[in-house]
Length: 329
Image (cartoon, rainbow, N blue to C red; front, side, top):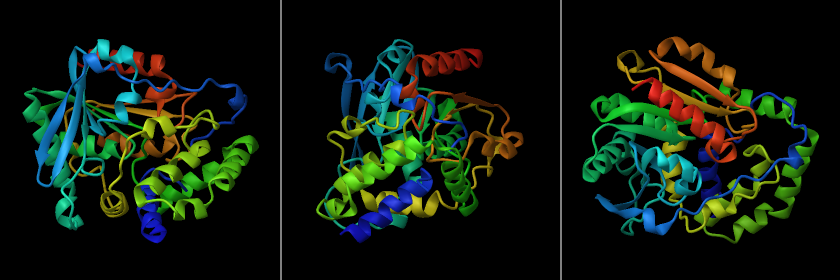
């Protein structure tokens, strides 16, 4: 079981660049833990959207500009601030990697093709009865948000990409690992080593593939969070992972993706949010060669964030995002 699991998580962390950005980790142990928000039940509209064998769950919260957050209806409401809901009407929608499905074998090239996943996003927007949306993707979901805007430009007003590199080529993975080795503090590296010893592979062997996937992500927190001691377990509560989907999409489709394809026709503005201490993706300068391909790209680096600046620096993230949206209305 763990062998299959490792292939799936390896695919995920290839996109997330398990194996980043420059900067020391001075005073990291004194940083405040980001608050994991539980969204009030009374303010949410929730339901499911049928997509073949899958029931894509959604959760709508807030008022204001419509924004569709791609990925999970459980994880992402916990990762964005309550204050942002005062300005954005946010729909958090599952993709097939996190959604319940009718049991049975999967055919990844058919069930998890990128066009199929993108069509699911458009199906969700249509069934919600929304017009143009701000398409928001975090980590690998950033690619989904960008490709969605390319395929359905009339459905998108803005694109938001958070915590992602321009590709997951071998060169990008090498650069990510080199940055970890050269710039991560001794404290951060020691905390990672301790975490891996505390939750060894033998523990993962006893878990389901989904449980092992999540635990491996959690135990690698020093590579993911500005505060290297942050425990992300609450973010994953109630989650179930379709590791076949991640294995195929992250390990095949995203590994070979070339996001420059079609950018010459994309006239929607793109906001790219990066964390200075994100050791899962290449450093921010990796985006410089791609800037000329975008008609309107804004890059914002958050100096006290890792892979998830919307949770780690919510006030700064919210202000930067909302200012950018308003400046391009």
